[in-house]
Every structure is written in C-alpha cells, then in structure tokens.
Length: 457
Ligand code: SF4
Ligand code: SF4
Image 1 (spheres, rainbow, N blue to C red):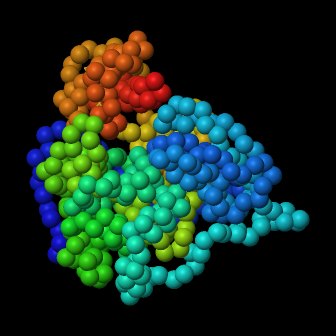
Image 2 (tube, helix red, strand yellow):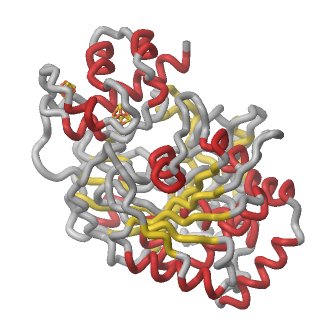
C-alpha cells in the first residue's frame, strides 16, 4: 500500500482539542436559497468587474464578474434569478469596500419557484471506477493549456481558505519545475470536518481532480497528505488509488495531527524536508499544494464545465446538530440560521472559518463565499483583551519563527510600517499565537488589518 507513515520532527505546533462534532455527518444539501448576495471579490487578487445590471435575468453558472488583472477569478451566479440590486459590502480579508450583487430567484405567475436553468451539464453519469478511468483517458488527450482554461473559466480558487486563483497556481512560470504535488487533506483546525467528509464521499472525484493537476504540471509524484486521526479517509483513498491504477504516481502521507499541519509551508517541511524561504512560494522549491475540495472542483470543471457555484462547509459550535452542508455561494448566514433554527444572531457570535483562523461577522446578511469552509457559532465565555505581559508564549509557538507580540504592540499605535520590520508578510495567519496568549490579545485580527493596510500603501 502506498502509505508513508511519518513521525516528523515538528518543533513548533499545538495539540488542540479537536471538537470534530460533525465528522460522522454525511454531507447534506441545503435547499437552493431564494436570494443570494455575491461579492465581486471572493479570492486573492483584484476585484472582478460586474457585467450584469439590475433587472437582468441570470442562469445558474452564468458569469457575472469578469477580470482583466493577472490575479483574479471569475464569478458566476449561483442561482437562476433576477438581479435585484447592486450594493456595497466589506471584504473581510482586506477590510475594503467592494461591489456585490443581490440575485433573487425567479418565480412563475402563480408564485411558484421557476425551474433552475444551468449553463453546465452535471447530469452526465460518472460513478464507477470504469467511468472514472474513461474520464482520465479523455483527460490524457487534453493539453495543459486547455485544462487550465477550463479551471479559469470555472472561477476556481483554493478552497482551503486562502482562495488563491487556481489557474494562476497551476500556471508555473517558465524555468520552474514542479516535482511534487501535495494534495492537502489535513484538516487540522478544530471543529471543521468538511474536507474529511469530502474525502469519504468524493474520493474518486478528488483523485481525478488530482490527476488533472498531474497532467498539467507533470510532477514525479502526487502525495495526498492526511492526518493519522482520519484512518477511514486514509484507507479509502488508498483503495481508490489502487482501483484507478495510480499507485505508481500517487502516495499517501499519514501525518501526526498537530496544528497547523495543514499550512502549506508546514506540510512541505514535514513531508519533503524542504524549507520555503520567507518571501518565496512553494513552487520555488518545486512543489504545488492544492486542497482536496479544490481538486473536486477541478474535476467538476473539466467533467461538466461546472463553475464554482457551491461548496461544502461545516456548520458547528453552539448549535444542536452540527452538520456538513453542500451550499450555494452567496447564501446568507441569516438563511442558514433559519435552516438550523437555533443560531445566535448577536453580532460577532458567528465566526466564518474555524476558531483559529476565522473572523466574526457583524450581521446576518453576510454571504458564504468561496473561501468559507466553516460557520462556527461561538460557545462558551467571551474573552476580554488585556495588556501584553511579555511572556513570550506567542513567540515560542509560532511555526514561522516570528515575534507576534510586536504586531499587537505596534497595532495599538497604528505603526504598521514597523510590523514590516518584523516580517508580518511571512505570517500564515494560523492563529496559534492568539490561542496561547494569556492576555487574550486578538493577534490575528491585528495581523490581518496590518497586512491589508500595508498592501494598500
Ligand atoms: S504570527 Fe502568524 S504564523 Fe505566527 S503564530 Fe501568529 S498567526 Fe501563526
Ligand atoms: S503571548 Fe500574549 S501576553 Fe505573551 S508575549 Fe505574546 S502577546 Fe504578550
């Protein structure tokens, strides 16, 4: 079996209480919402230009946001409906004001919901190993440029949280050679189980997505990184690799469950013993890392021309029944609350993302975006920020060997330039520093604000 079990030397990192309450919950599909709000920036890079206007009718999967900048990703309507309004919203990643579009579902003259019209065909049956093998041989006939074009047209971004446009990540500059692709199935942040369920329920699609990446980049090997507390996923992926006849190229690396094992640079260090220098990218050391859910989206794009209009998220925390849900992009958290019925809707009680890397949302009109992997309803007491006592815990836990306390100190005085002297751009926003801080200083919030202020200078 192609499983590499390792006990890497992992000098920094945290063993966290997992709280994976929804790990045994199969992915459920939430009904298509009657209204969505879709921001024109759900990715790293430039905001898209809105190409529809109020009153336009749009199909599910229709492009509504286009771009001309180098780094950006197309945006598509996630429902069939009418553009009700164009509005402004806040991009939480950059704290900047961006355009968004509100789309309302179509109804017939009797008030019934109109049938969904799609721009893609996902009714093609690809479900048994032979079907997937046929799909793979068809992929062999496509060029790398054709495959990348499909991924670009589908608006795919990294679904692990960073939301970096995938077509850019797979367009390796001339002179660079990728020898290893790492497929990231480490879901090390507490509570979140979406990728774990994806591996259990869409293993073939994920592997075919990884095969497309393999065809584009032509590496020596593809390593699927899974934490060793997800034995079911490791076994299933190993079986599916064999069924697809990929065992000479695809390997599984079973890694210890430590936080932040799933961060790109941490993975590369632990699996390949390569260090990505500050200011460099994984491709500079011959590696591309893609998340397992991104691989599934790549498969959908190539097999069905399906754009990224939905994703799987975990909804968890202080609710009666945590779940994993397939949900349309642009669904409002207020509609999720109606689905669950038991949500707190107090401002800042709801976090988008996990407890380590997430951010709280100010109101229930906030939409699920491409990078949202989790909606966490806070439970337990709220923490009150106190002064830094210079204990140094944040320094000793930082996987990037930074001095997080300095960001807190400078942030309070708006001295953002000084944060640069302490390599704020090297921070991977893992949240370990804030987690261990006895003074409950929201260091990641300060870091995010600092990065966005510096990026605008
Ligand atoms: S400074 Fe950044 S990389 Fe270091 S622990 Fe804090 S969030 Fe993680
Ligand atoms: S862990 Fe908190 S209190 Fe301790 S040095 Fe870092 S910022 Fe200061």
